[in-house]
Length: 214
Figure 1: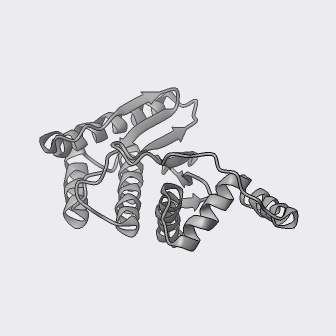
Figure 2 (figure 1 turned 120 degrees about the vertical axis):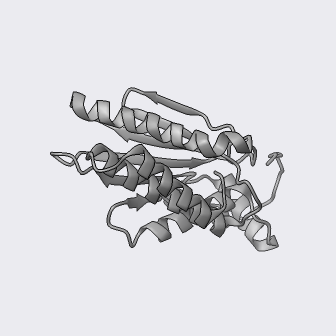
């Protein structure tokens, strides 16, 4: 959304209170005033829509014990933590970031893992490659381009624009279900309890339930 500089006459007392609130919310004066005015006139800004999506994901995942979400006020990304079923139960961190532009991709999923175990590093890398191979089966025929990267304890996957129209709640549901599926498959695969065929079966069931290619 394009931004334009405007000059406004405001009370010093009002500005002081706006600045206090902006500081508490982790934003700045311009962004807060823009958000307040947009809400007053009933306009949904890209920032507000992103926050709605991420807030809904946080709400959907909070009852679960396997994924622990954290969303800072006004943030454009959601953080989650999960523990692997592997010897000393290492922690994996997820970051779901959404873009304001409204293009394709609409965001990015980052999976961060820190370990010195060669066995775990190998198992994680094998899982990510297998996951990409499974997604290729469903995304390539649809003409969807998903970007992947694996380097230095980080796996990155772009989040595609939804394959059909959906609101913030619908997209949040699809992303929450995707995170649940990804996390469960990763844990089972790294623990040696899962095969690529089982992963593809579960991925297919996920798409039947959601009908959204993201």
